[in-house]
Image (cartoon, rainbow, N blue to C red):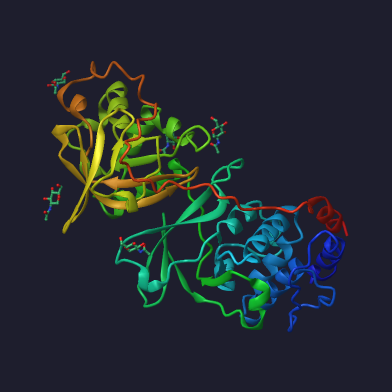
Length: 410
Ligand SMILES: *[C@@H]1O[C@H](CO)[C@@H](O)[C@H](O)[C@H]1NC(C)=O
Ligand SMILES: *[C@@H]1O[C@H](CO)[C@@H](O)[C@H](O)[C@H]1NC(C)=O
Ligand SMILES: *[C@@H]1O[C@H](CO)[C@@H](O)[C@H](O)[C@H]1NC(C)=O
Ligand SMILES: *[C@@H]1O[C@H](CO)[C@@H](O)[C@H](O)[C@H]1NC(C)=O
Ligand SMILES: *[C@@H]1O[C@H](CO)[C@@H](O)[C@H](O)[C@H]1NC(C)=O
């Protein structure tokens, strides 16, 4: 394997820079790496490859081997090592060989331009909660180290819930669920891997999609399940240019994004053909750029101000969770699907009724003259719950990049 010569020479160069804390030589070697001169980081990478090899995750073994030869991959792996060698608990989700194949990923993996975002989305700076602590049908939001934008240090999130099979955790994404089937034993490599836990996952996890992609996917759902489609909402957003505003929001210029998207069933009459000006006001009543609120934050004490300044609160009872709008004419809307992740750190929830539409329903196209507030963020209520992605101080990189680059040229 290519890993053999290149990584070893890179690591040999690095050996003098990396402080040898608890050098651990790998007992069984899947590839012919000379480990006798083992620095701690080298020991870590070797141990990782060894575990992947003997657990028959040969494709992912190759992914890591190739990736460690790139500057970006080297940095990330070294950041992981820095954390786990200090006994921080981290998790690496390892897609099976079949998962990589069905995602269309084949060697050489580093040819794939999205490899960085794909792989960092499988690294979590935390230990997953154990299966027994999951609450039936409730989502658990877990942060990854995949930056939400190129320049951000906030990690994109994963949505987890109790799986259908005992002991297994599901990853819930836009187009379906994947399963974290269980832990991969570390055997005698446990020491070198420190606080890192390896878990097998049956799919390559899809990174959060952009708002237009989400809408296109869910608008199509209309034909399959007539009540859950977002075709009318999508058209209204698009016609009024709010779609561009929302799509261009990100954590650099907003504090988050929470969208309550009304399903087609929420609309009546010819509302979808109402004037753009009226729509702007209605649409502004369905999102906020002041925070990202996941379902875990839909508590009785939470209050969220939408962009149009109407507030929403939450009620959960035996029939589900409802968004209650301060717009008295609207009553409450049931959340029919929650926690659809958006690229850039936002989240979208599908509701079955409009949260604000007084103007729309009572007037015609002359209404809604004031549109200036359409894209401004609402005020964050002091009591509002935050499940907002927190920054993380990972990717702590030792000054080895230049040296690593020397190794790559071999
Ligand atoms: C389950 O619910 C309890 C109580 O709300 C909470 O503390 C715990 O974190 C939840 N477990 C998971 C995995 O979300
Ligand atoms: C928005 O409208 C444009 C132009 O009609 C179209 O190309 C695009 O696909 C629409 N986007 C969505 C999400 O429907
Ligand atoms: C995030 O917002 C900034 C500032 O408006 C913009 O320059 C950048 O392109 C945005 N990034 C993404 C990924 O949308
Ligand atoms: C649950 O709360 C919603 C919103 O207040 C209400 O419309 C619904 O009737 C309630 N359902 C039950 C079973 O209490
Ligand atoms: C809207 O205007 C049309 C004619 O332009 C009229 O027939 C209709 O009744 C009006 N609707 C409302 C709610 O005022």
